[in-house]
Image 1: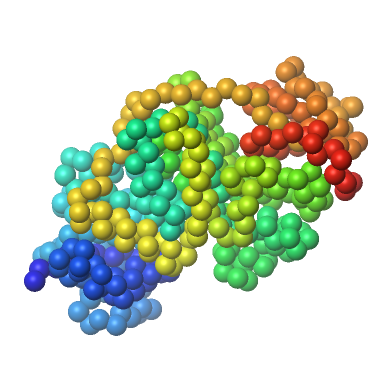
Image 2: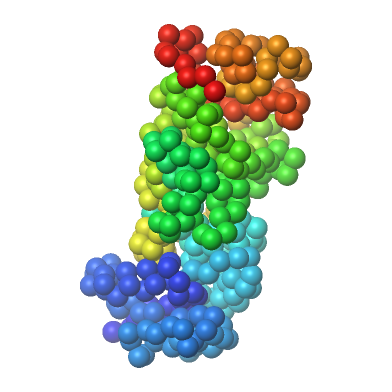
Length: 405
């Protein structure tokens, strides 16, 4: 019986999860494919630091050893960084291999080109694991696009930042205290910049933008803000108003460009992301026919990410991964004036034209309505504005006891 042969790039947390999943679920995979699924080679940085239970698996630090294998059907990319993953996948596609990647940074920058190359070489390109770990975001969006026009996507795409904000609120911790706990639990790296400054979520948002709208967000319409400036006092005040801080990525079409923001926002009880806590990820999708669809689940880790990769492997084996990243998807423009909560002195603040104060919570906290453009003109050295996602009626909250800061 012939086998589906796999070259696995990387043998860290994700790579080991993929290898172990294929080994443990071989019977299930053989029932699906009608043949054995076999990891034939694994690429690592340092061969002396790794071992593989199966002596027949080639363990190497040279990608050329893998690309030169007599039989190679699928290359799975479980490494990080734009390079060398991009170069490796180009070589694999050019050889005629199907490829699957979990490398969000690389794919955010090179997804369109790799998709074009895969189409030219008549091979499949799977990237479910680049966004949301074990949540089937990519496949769900592909299915929706068959009939729906997606108008907006909002998501909590990084479990580390969500864990920190949850811990600050539930445990009454400072940002620094919550970050330390996240590092102790293994949710945050020693250098947590990619997570807490929003880079990780932004790369994932770019992938979704390419998929949904056929192009990356415009640089001038992109905002990436971290959560390091949020204080426990702000979290308490938000809680007293029935709101929660969330680090949310949002993408939507605005005329001929795509607006993408990754920033801390406030969510009310009615918003789909309000109850997403801890290291969970979630995505809220608004489409013109189906309405709102929300997906939630583990966004990272050994087996959730491995699950997404294996799902892609099954789609590859069945030949049902459609082409994506097509320019010119249906246009849709969303124009609205969201509600904002500002920390600052409303009496001294010089608000741009179009900003309407609708409620004063305290001397230094007030609620107002304004367009995104008007808020961008605020003097951010004196004021800090946080958007409230979803429907929010501040008048309904005024009877609730407010904690002053």
